[in-house]
Amino acid sequence: AEGIERWFTTKAEVEPGPNGRIRYFWEEMSADGSAAIDAWEPNRRLVLRHLPPEGASTEGQLPILEEWTIEERDGGTLLRMVQSQVPGDANWDEYYDSTNRGWRMYLEHLRHGLERAPGRPREAVTVWYAADAAPADAWARLIGTDGLAVQGEALRPGDRRRVQRLV
Image 1 (spheres, rainbow, N blue to C red):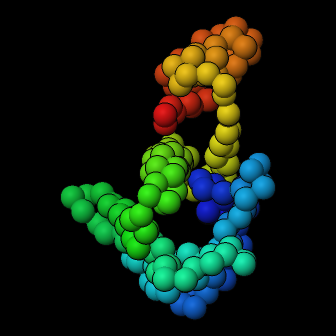
Image 2 (image 1 turned 120 degrees about the vertical axis):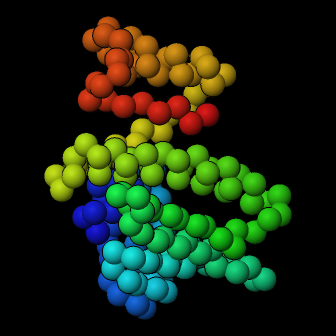
């Protein structure tokens, strides 16, 4: 759970092993989720079956799966995550788009932590910002002197704050 909280959610609960379960909490968004652990091979493979929210209708829908694999390759480590069984109808377009943006962001959090702070406690902070402006204008406001650069300093490469534009 602690490892998941370093790069993915603000809080997690894990019952490890096959037939275990993971619960995720994004406290800043009042959101949560859970997944059953279908395969558990430490340092090799993990398969999660996402469980629907209580009361949600899942008639005719397969559970969304995530398969994580790790393998040594060319003196490094390859992490592969495949998400499958996401329904293909138009009702799921928003889910697909937001998940695609989200995974890019969260995997960047993971990479950053592994490369720059291996084994050290850290916390990834995600700020969700809804703006009533075009993406370019919202971005300018977010990183401008009234946004993250609150003391009037521009953000520079290597700063402790890292901003990733996903829109």
